[in-house]
Structures are given as structure tokens and as C-alpha cells.
Image (cartoon, rainbow, N blue to C red; front, side):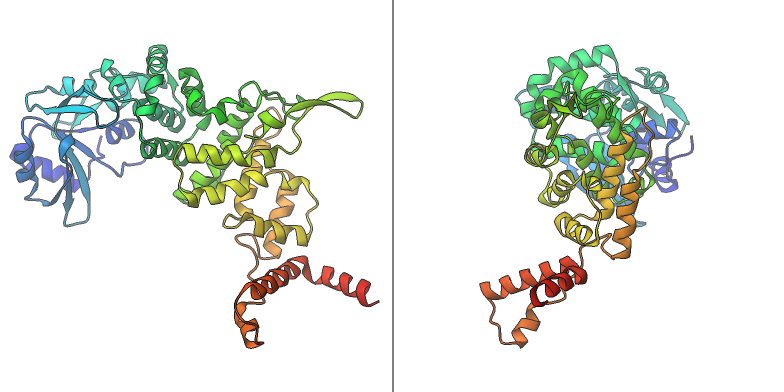
Length: 455
């Protein structure tokens, strides 16, 4: 493997104190898997204490004690690169919560002992860049080839966040959890309350931003019973759908297929991190209203399973879920209108309707909604995995009206009314709102009203 940045390789080679320093974690996993080069490099150093490590690294750049209590030193070099160096440690759980650990650094810990404290076998592999040697004490490479997510040792249960990390790793790398890992995670279910919401959000956002098969992460939640902590998702399990329209099964199954479909769309993969998060969370939540709205009704002379109004009914559970995982307001403001409008392609697509849609979606966009609606349509195998023609029509019409990315800007603004002598206040606001409504109605609607009013 030749994945180590030349600058890091030089530091390790020319620093005598770092002769027992090994790359660990995700950078090694990804290199062995042939994935794109890692951006983050973690180096575990044996045989030194904290002060010795800082002194050794200080020759190469600025050291930042970002995690002194956890033995982490970030080295920032003059070239702008940064690397995390850690000391092997023994953690003892002494209290609830992610800070409830008694940490002991021990330079005499062996690499095998240190690797045993890592979460999953695929993350416990070490690499010696000087000897070009891989140290795989717990079968991480075999598990990777078998697409198996397996906890490394009994130390796994010391940090409940590792279960949510398993969720996002399963989604990112299309993994299936080993039965013993599923069982251990189930026994840990009661420790969810120890997690700070910021840590929960971090794992959910990794799932939303990076998954190749998001449904694998959702399946992991269901198998480990940690889905109980996210009742808005759990409610989808067993919620029936009309087989003629949804041959794939219940709403949970449909949602998994939709998330997977989104992850395959080039426009999603090429979007920025926040947008990928928004669209994946919107697809996850788009049918949150179905458990409450679904019932049986006679349609066209036969009994069918229907969910009228589920898009509006999904707004509140989507809001609660986003709050539960600690999503910031900027994300929620984009996700909620996507949930509320995800059936727009079933409506009559007029210029007026498209302009109004652009306004309802803001700060999100029609282009983003089309991604969500496309994923929704593609999540119904064995039906064809393609965007409905009405979604294509909507996107084309939005492009023509120049509202694909945002609503039309108001023509009449406050400065115009000020020039006419209208003072700032409720009256001005009311006039601006009415003017914008008239603008969204379009010239044709204005003409129709003029004709009817004035003959």
C-alpha cells in the first residue's frame, strides 16, 4: 500500500521517537479496500508518554492539544496538512455518559491490546509504514471481504455511540452486522440516554451524507432494536401500502428503497455535504405521515389501502425527528417543505403553481424537491427505477420560469413604496405581500381579473 502522504512518511521515518508509530482506523481500512485516499490520518504511538510525544512532534510544526484527556495531539505542518497522533490507553467506565471514563495512558500497552479497544474489526487494523506491514489481529480484512460488521471485543459496550456508528458504517459500506454484534447492541439499548445529542447528530449526518446503501443502516437499527429510540422511523414498520402502487411492501421497506435510490443519483452524489444531508433526511422522513393517515377505503368499486393527506401529516413527526437527532434549524427549514410538498408532481403543473411552489419551498428549491420525488418514485421495485414524466415536466417548467433554484424576486419593494410616501409599518407589509401574491399569480391571471372586473 502506498497511501501515506509523503510528508507524514518523512515525519515517521526521521523522528527516532516515532519508531513505534502505526497508522490506524479508517485510513487503513479505506486503503485496504481500494477506496479513495483518506483525508484524515490517525497515528497511534507506542512507548512514549504525553510530554515526549509533544516534544517529538514540535519539531515538525504546530501541536494542538485538542484532546489531552484522551491522549490526542493534532500536528499542523507548515505545508497546511494536519495529522492526529494518539497514545494507547486503557479506559474504565466509571459513570454514565461519554465523559464517564477513567482514562489511563500506558506506554507499555501492546498494539494488539490497543487494537482490541477499537469499535469494529474493520477499524482495528494497523499499518506500519516503515516496514510496509499490516497488523490485523482480529480478522478485519476477512470481515471486510465478507461485508460483515463485527465488534472487536467486549470493550465495545463501554461507549453506546458505537451502535450508532455501526448504523452509519453499515450504510456507508453496505455491511451486515454479525449476529453476536446485533445481540450485544440489543443489550446496550438502555444506554442510549447517555448520549449527548451532538454525538447522535454526528452519526446521523454521516449516514445521511456518505451512505452508499442507506437501507443497510436502517436495517441495522431495526435488527439491534435501537430503532425504538426513533419512533418516527419504527412506526413505518408494518404500515401497509396498496400493492398495486407499492409492490415492494410496507412503508419501512419503501423508505429503504427510496434512500438507496437517492444515493445512486449523480445529482445527489455531486451535491455539497449539507445538501446531501438535507435530501437524504427528507427522503427518510417523506412518509412519516403514513402511519397516521393510512386506512382502507373503497375506491373504484374495490377496497384499497390509501393514505390521503400523509404529506401534510408528516410535517410534525419530521420536525420531532429532526429535533430528536439535533439537526440545526438551517437543515430543518429545508427538510420540512420537501416532506410537505413531495407529492406536488401529482398536481396540475401550471406556471402559477410552479411559482407558488418555489415560494413554499424556500429556502429549499424545486431542483431539490425533484431529487426527492425521483427517489420516491424509484423506491418501488419491481416497478421501473425512473423519474416520472411529471417530475421532468416540473423541472423543465421551473427552468423556463427561472425558479429552479429559488422563488422569483419581488418586483415591488419597500423602497418603491417609500418613494410614493408609504411609511414603514403594517400597511407597507400588507401592500408588499399583496403585490407579491399578484406577481406569483402571473400576468395572465391578472388579465383575467381585469377583464372580469372592468368588462
